[in-house]
Image (cartoon, rainbow over all chains, first blue to last red; front, side, top):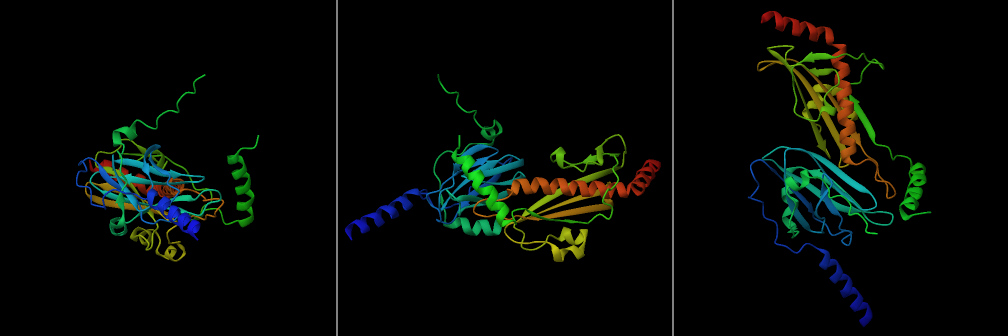
Length: 158
Length: 180
């Protein structure tokens, strides 16, 4: 009985430890006028242990943590947001300066690992669902960083 | 040497075949009567600021072709459409019944407007609705892939419409040149 209790507590601890721990959602008021705000959020906890990185045009932004969100200031033009485990989910937005976009993430059933699902949702839906999420802490690359493209793979030393 | 990724690929392929329904369902409107539509090139000032790949191939940007007329091309991609965009009703109201809706669908609409100043003289529109199928073994196309495919299909459809109507367009351009 004690072992089972300890295991259950350990499991809960692992789950909670993986969730976003920053402050609760507040709208970003510091978006430059020549950029758009792209909120990426994951409202559920299903598949909590699976936390793939979300990329913008191939550049990693932040992990898709359960009940977490982050905001990326995107430059106008096409923007591909993707997440990858054993499968890849990808959406492309036509970014216009001054606009706000919401990309909702979740983890679904997979064969070996849960599959990420990214969908673009309307502002009404996104603004409502994101309020339960907490900020995923850590620096988010800027649009200038993303424009440079993904970092080349490190050369192996002989 | 068998790797984990090749093992997964080997498992997913027969599973996909066995389950079928892995292909994305595509509905395009308007449906063209001619299975081999004519091709043409229409030289005209084009107002468009998107990717060149998605501009209908029949349109060739030629700023000197007309002083008063231009063609404006715009498109829109809507994800998880629960209600059909009004532009689809403009394209073909009869097709509304067959269009898939829901979280796994994507609707791409494209519109070509022939404009003189602020007036729109003629419009053409096309729409492609796609619904993806996925299983635990295979997620199907990504929305990015579906969007690109939809934009190319819409562009081709609009090119065909423009080429089918090129005599009328030529008359409009000629009329515009005479008025100058």
